[in-house]
View 1 (cartoon, helix red, strand yellow):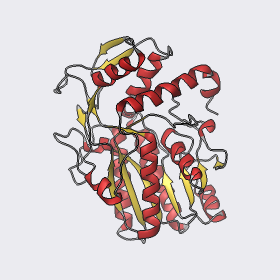
View 2 (view 1 turned 30 degrees about the vertical axis):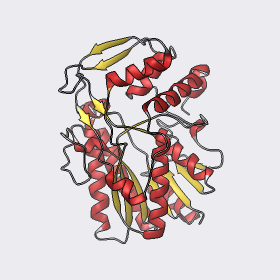
View 3 (view 1 turned 90 degrees about the horizontal axis):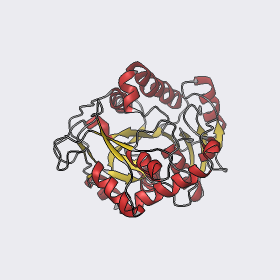
View 4 (view 1 turned 90 degrees about the vertical axis):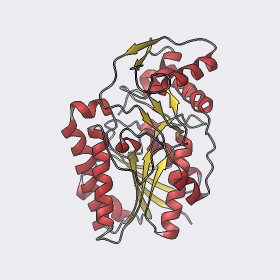
Length: 335
């Protein structure tokens, strides 16, 4: 069955990877993106782009009514934890209030199957691997905005005939193996991207945000998942929603924690030399350890990741940064 998918934030990192995968598999993709942080060069040529805000009710309604969509995937939103702490109202407005408007517009126009891009940050600090049913303790406004949107979707599903998949991303990294898309950001806070930027000479040094956490080597621990595996999860969720119409919530990670120092050590081994590293202050709102319990996801789809290897993730990230370095101006002209 050919899918017609409406996808917000398709000019962004994860959204563009999912768009490429859907088109690779022969499906139709229509993208809504205001290009505030997105980059048109990441969008597949076969995708239809509408440049507008997700809160523009009339325009979104017009887009939905022009084509019979099977489902909507919602990626659009702000993602910087540090910025969310400085500007909490901005994050609640963009990520929660606008998402509410967008979803209500979808529901009013009979688009009632959705996949929502959430975050593991809603768990806060967890002692063990985070379960989907664990108590939610967001430590920053970004995480809170995602949790509020999750709750809105769940509440709406109790009173309206809608079905959903909520995907809680752990730390997403890597790039498309064909290098058609990857992470493009002027103000990235992603460890692996920054480390690879240092490796290719775009930055002088990597600053580790604290080395006195209560972890085995003093640095924060994260569960990294390759963006191409994450894209595949979205595809499986889309198929499941169409066939079964059952709502689910899944953690998206590998269930394996990696420290900042381990990332740096692995990258240095790939390079055959050491990047410059400095120790900085702890970043407000950071959790010391976030690792996924992925049993529910793996069992439901009988799924096995293809890229569950830190070296693979780093190598693809490094190749992407080399591509960006070769034509920096072109890639960082966001409009």
